[in-house]
Length: 148
Image (cartoon, rainbow, N blue to C red; front, top):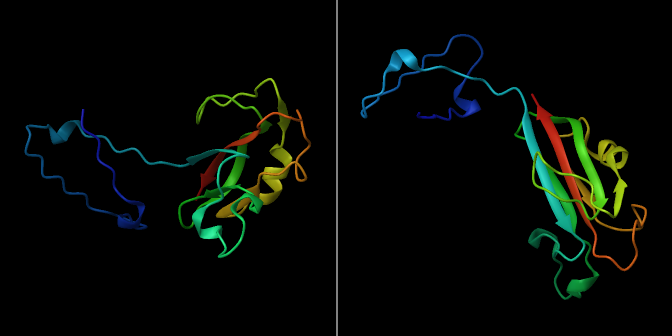
């Protein structure tokens, strides 16, 4: 089975003509076209992770900067749902995140920062979130959905 990705910028309102030149013996009559109506965005960042390079400041002590989760939808899309947001020791990967033994549900904080936006940033800090387990390295895991 072959899969082709057609960038959204190539598709315009109204009729579009798609021409495929198949050289490997594919059967064009068996092609199907699927459109994507949502985009899942995930991030998992630890307190110990360094901040993003574009936030570094010259002559500043590296340890004083706070890491953050930055989420970006495709241009023209916006966040419309937060499926998962946990601060503590979340487990899993995108689509399978689950709370760890140390967990604070921070969905409402992430919703306030992201819903309706094309991009958002959430600093990882116990001053912003409750401290679910002192003396444990914590992280923030987020699974969000973008739509056009």
